[in-house]
Amino acid sequence: MEEKRLEHPEERQDEKQEKKKQYPVTRRDFYGCVIILLIAVFLQGMQTRALIRREAQNMNNRCQNIESQMWNSISNIQDGIASSLAEADNPLQESSVEIVAANLKEKKVTLRMTAMPKEWKTGDTSLQFYLSCDGGEKIAVDAAAGADHSFTAEKEIPFCEVAAVTAILQRGDTEYPFDLGETSVAGVVYPFFSGDFFGSYSWVAVGKEATVGGDIDVEVQPSDWMMQKDKSLTLKNPTVEIYVDGKRVQKHKMQAEVADTNFTRYTYTIEKAFKVKEGQYIEVYFKAEDENGLKYTYLVDRSHVTNGDVETAESAVPAADSVQEGRLKVE
Image 1 (cartoon, rainbow, N blue to C red):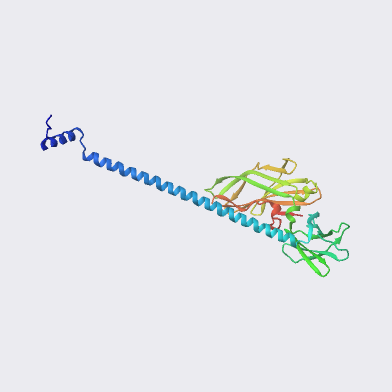
Image 2 (image 1 turned 135 degrees about the vertical axis):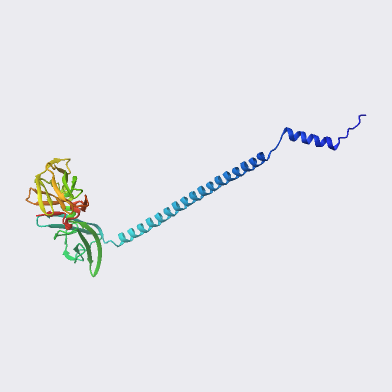
């Protein structure tokens, strides 16, 4: 029988010391592990926060989309209800307002208004139109009944921006009013003008004076009414006139180029530069005459020379949309 050997405490202590020598753990190793652990925890926290923020943003986007869809559905339902109610109250099955004649020289147009009732009773039905221009006083226009039971009336009116028409259907002692809407007038019958003055300035006298050159470009196309009626527009003697402080400094004939069937482009390149001083105004006009003897004067550009620079004094908006503002004169 073998004897069991007892270890002495000092021997056990020696073994522990020997292991420490073989696998020494320094203070640097300890703090390094702690730092690595903290970094790992921090990065994990950042990833978690980023994930939370991303999920919150996604949830917010989903909520906004749901809310938008909900309001769109409500709006569509409301529009559908309003449309159904309006259609139910509408005593007419057909109605229209159109320009049938235009006199640009006298600045007058003729409107034709038509309306067909949903129901008809012989000898018990009549209709009257009410016409107003630019929100002014309403003018009563009697309508005549046709063989197809539709009512028609024509009325010549002066040019205005918008004409509004209301129809009142009379059945016995009961009136049924209905709004036929608004119709653009001047902007529809006048030709459409647009243009630019591409000026080039050479400054002298420390920005107080400049010589001016550049290109002038104008496009003219028939009005919507002209195109609907298959009417062409031919302009004679297209010229450009340049004014400085109200005094004409140049006048030239412009070159016409038919860009396509819808509009004609007129161009001119300034051959001899003119001078301007600080504080002066430059005005560029396009002038032409049509086959009916109607004369057009279109303000292409109006600029103010100031502080060694040039500022647009009047925006170059299409003339047909601003006849009342003086951009286009017709004589």
